[in-house]
Image 1 (cartoon, one colour):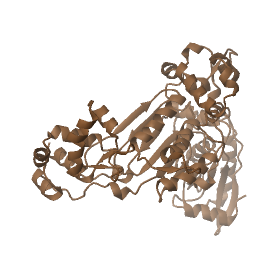
Image 2 (tube, helix red, strand yellow):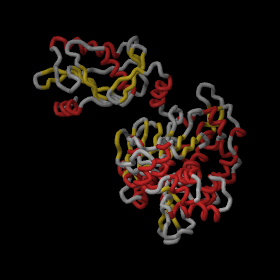
Image 3 (spheres, helix red, strand yellow):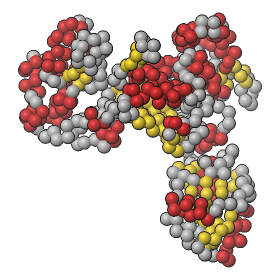
Image 4 (cartoon, one colour):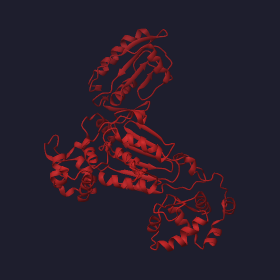
Length: 518
């Protein structure tokens, strides 16, 4: 039974995902049972009767308390109204001379219906999801104790697997353990030793979903798990600027995107390449003082592994891997172990897909429990001194790490309209620049747009289909640098093998100038 102080505290903080107020001063409304149903299907909670929406205690008519209590007990135990039945007895208490009833609703192991309708709890609202098949399916998925990676697909054969992915796995394992037993197995022997099972209901044997997700061909995955996808997007603006753009900002949906629908081994490689392509390269020497560590890899391999390993793969929600100029955000659907905002020091994980995780660990793509967080905490401050990590855990797991000061990347806020005004305020106009550099507007624009995100010389000439690096550097790169439109990431070593080029604020303003004049 709740103490008076605890009740007052809950009333003070208002309604939320696990607290609901009902006026109900003389009879029980149908909405009470809808809330009971949604709490049972979600994370449980407390329902207070005789309380206004703002938490003010109205009180229940003393003559009605007994009848209201009986009504609640009878309804929740009536399978024609509430299925499966759930015996919950309301508690009565008196606060400031007024009687209230409250129900302590647990999180149920089953999915419940009220009057044959399914209800789920979103924030502080009860939602009837009966007409949305995928939302109902998600509720059943939450209650499923067995991991979806164990679902068996009897019609999938070895021919449906990707040979290259097996080679990648063995290559990584052999680096760390040349005597690993998986190295001497055939593909079929390996798969059957780890991923073979019987289908529930039919007892037909076959490969588990874990095998398909790890090694399946793209078409195989599409057939068995059509919603498997990771959407990797890079936007060359700060996160806040993306949410609240200025009227003068160019309308750019994204600067780079990779829609990844391949197996998890190939997905890991593509996501890591995406990070290296769109994030600044910072390195430090390893503890031995000799080896070079790419800090991007040290941090983001943990984050990539987490978003791939801890996803609930029968959910229709796709993974998101979002890079902005100042932060990285990942989103994936999961069965939550912890809920709410989490400090990384208190982030407790449990293995949600143990078969998939086992393969990643043997490849050294994932650490033992707890080690991944340790590496993130260790290397994030080295990548950006003021890095911030935010974690929000629920059915949707969101991880965010800030790796740059967003103020570094703001466009000029006071760009005036008109090409001549922009040319005067920020430097030469398009005509002036083109004449001075002996380059066309199209050539200048193409290079500046390409280098919105940092690019190496080889990346630039590959994208723009040039072949001679020396001529391209002399004709295009050097003049744009001298004009202040491009800049080098390693300015004191122009010929460094780590050299990359990026569009300066002046270059961005010039692009914006042309956008406004078109």
